[in-house]
Length: 244
Image 1 (tube, rainbow, N blue to C red):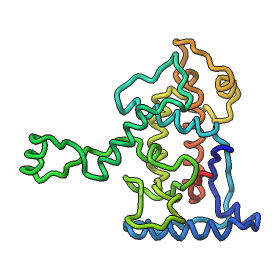
Image 2 (image 1 turned 45 degrees about the vertical axis):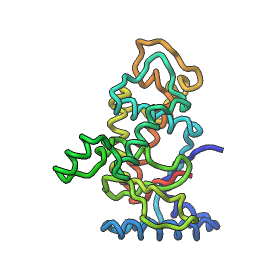
Image 3 (image 1 turned 90 degrees about the vertical axis):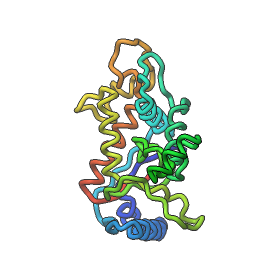
Image 4 (image 1 turned 60 degrees about the vertical axis):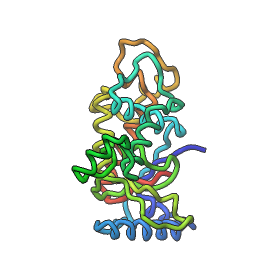
């Protein structure tokens, strides 16, 4: 079992006349309700479009890329001599904690901090950290929709049968985040997720410290390229990105 990324989930279900159709329509209905509650247009998921599905490197690629993002957020250098294989999550966990403190209003709770916030009538919360659409999302389920919004959406109330849909991410924001990470990983503009050299480095990592970062971090690079391609296809077709 692993993580697959799909664009055109509803169209795929309909074309196969599968039992997934009812599930897909139910999920889209819940997503539309959440978008409408936040003042956004409904999704308009196409029922007929090109379907694209790619397997990630298990869940390791997603976690490795999240750690790269969080290391950059923390001002740490992305290592060239140590492979991020998805098991290192210290910085990614810190980013997630910062985001939830941002949502809950926690932050500087010292007496001085409270005094200044009271005088300035400021909310007690840190700023929203970067890379939240990449980082604050289910590892194995959920959607990114081609609708621009800054903060991942979680309805104030939802039932247990649809909790796998949240947080809901924005394709536009995810594209901006992975494009920034592609630059930090020194990924060549024309490199694709199915590149033979990239997959060779994933199979046999090289710890030579002088090589380009994308070669030093092939697992994170593969995840970055898959998500970037998914964003491109989502924006072209109007279909959501589905983690499955």
